Image 1 (cartoon, rainbow, N blue to C red):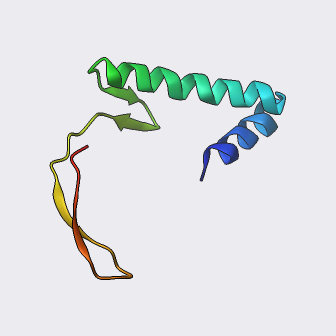
Image 2: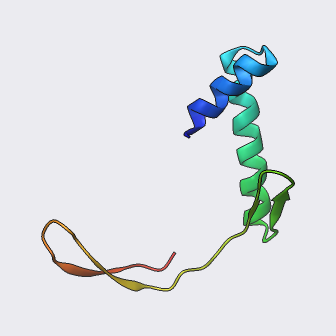
Image 3: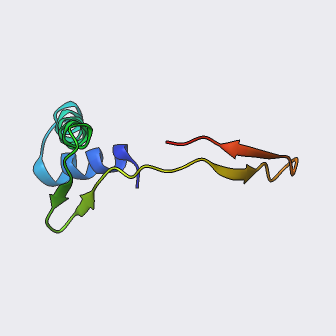
Length: 74
């Protein structure tokens, strides 16, 4: 499911316009992002838990060329 699918479902179930539904979804995503940036975890009952995870650099490989490289930390 992608964001536009979520917007369409909200549009149909709540009788909102596409623009209103999109604004609602974008606002929710922005709120989650802001909390994560502030170092907080986000728990939405019945939906999911969100938390930042720091990943170290790791080896990777291009499946087409078989060339190895390092995937940067994120």
